[in-house]
Amino acid sequence: MTRKIVHSLTAVSVSAAIAMGGAGVASAADAMGSISGLLGGGSALGSSKPDLEVPKGQRDLLGEVGGPAWNVNVYKQTFGATKVTPGAEVKVRVEIQGKSNNQTRVDEIVNVMPKGFTLTKVERIKSGLLGDSPAVLKQNEYAVVPAGDNTEVRVSWKDGLIIPQAPFVSPSKPVIVDFTYRAPSAEGTYKHGAGARVGSAITPYKVFNNATPIEVSKAAAPSGSSSGSSSSSPSAMGSLGK
Image (cartoon, rainbow, N blue to C red; front, side):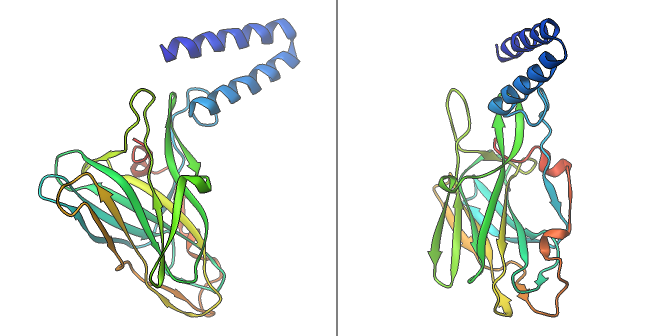
């Protein structure tokens, strides 16, 4: 049904472009871009390929959440160097991957942000009628909660046009959320971590604070941790928003 609607919209736009000449072509292209955006298909109509950066820093296995039947592994990874200058941009990825062969529901993803760091952006892949596309989340799509010396950034969502539901993960299908923040001016070594809330009767919620620490130092390279990345990774393409 969706495909028929899109084809109909395409035909209407093309017909209008032919009737109106060059100006009509530009107008039709703008209209189709708007339709694509509304349906979640990326920058071009029918394009469903997400474009996520790929972190190159160390990928840490922080721990396991859940019981024997439904469980996940929690990973955290810094995009570049873990030693940054004061005020540098730091980008990290939290990945929740199914451990058992059962599909495990992920009700909440938690990023433990180091004390003194300032959150600037949260990103994930969102599902749409035309496929998946990366999106910067609005402030009402996540919660920032003080937790002792750290700050927890909690992200949860439900996708689906008919029956919205939280994402499910397996060993081959993780969910990923990227977080960007600004390092403080105070030099030092800062602990951080991640966690999750899952659909399990046993240990459904757990947070870890054992990721590779981030060192803030004036002697660090000035580029920040977000520079060590590339784009369009196969591992990122099918991993979010489902």
